[in-house]
Figure 1 (tube, helix red, strand yellow):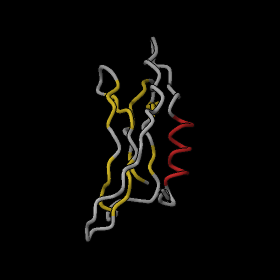
Figure 2: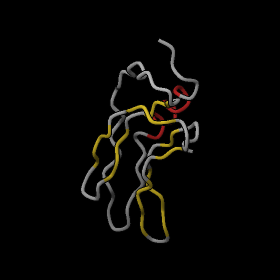
Figure 3: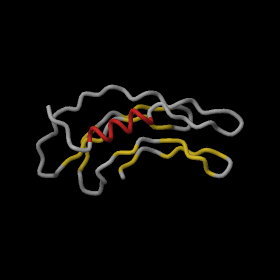
Figure 4: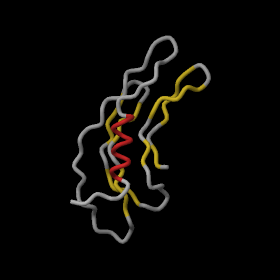
Length: 101
């Protein structure tokens, strides 16, 4: 099976950042769990070009929830997927959800 050209850089970035967590003010948030292994299925046959969006953990405010990978329309997306991370915003941390660059 051949992977789309963006899959390896995105997977590398996802694995590199998967265990990162930022300490919170007055305590710490739980670390982002490691990514789950996913088998990328063959894309559906459509007239619309598709990109594979890898699965990722998303913060709900109370914990992380796994969102499995899926195919999304290429239009409106960049070619690199950025996993979510914690960003220092002044004196507190905020969750930046996963997104396309």
